[in-house]
Image 1 (cartoon, protein in one colour):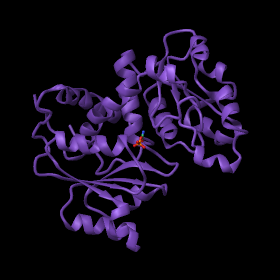
Image 2 (image 1 turned 180 degrees about the horizontal axis):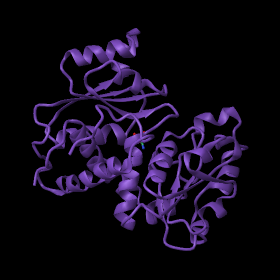
Image 3 (image 1 turned 60 degrees about the vertical axis):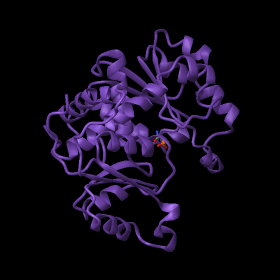
Image 4 (image 1 turned 60 degrees about the horizontal axis):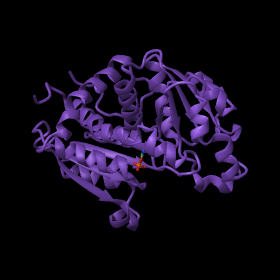
Length: 309
Ligand code: CP
């Protein structure tokens, strides 16, 4: 099987069977990373370009590893050392890359809609690696993969997403995906960081964190985007940590063995205590699963076929 679309731009509008196809395919690829020789010939001869206009550790590295483990040729373009610094436009940059016969271009950009803008103008498959405040679809897919791996299902699971919902492309993609897969989604954060109308996306809004996480199967903490503190969206970091941080005492009150997640990078001691992150979370499992999920996405966008045994 393959995906019906040329590109992966967002989770919004994806059907449950498409999400399931990606998660099931990722499960077949996960084993590749456990082998001594972490490589299958699935995308041999294909060219994958990482075009990141924003900083990244996890997403850029795991797309690179995913492509290499599928035997594709993978090139990373750092905008700080490219002709972007001379004023070359996004479209000119992408068209010049495509002129060198790329098959997949992975784009991270500060502007919402930048990957879609390129997808309409390029023959290459475009994968959104995070665009502005819009979506981060492969993060949501790896999060859903991890929840399904740990709990055995997505349908009927209750997920509390806590933090700066307003600016979070991770939250948006997860709300769309989890709601489509039958999960119940709660969101919680300072009122200034919860966008109006989010209920229409399928989430229930809480202002009290203890209420939001009570009885949840999954607590997904979001990074406090400290660079936005100047905007006065919350009174201070200590106040934020007290009201919306996940510490041991608060986790103990959740009431059952909830899975703790965070997309990274973390602000230790702000949205999540080090003790919780290091001893009671699946954060590094999320990162491991990101490689398998990105292998699956590239494989399925390239036409799919039966994965290597
Ligand atoms: N989760 C995530 O997108 O991390 P990076 O910014 O390091 O890619």
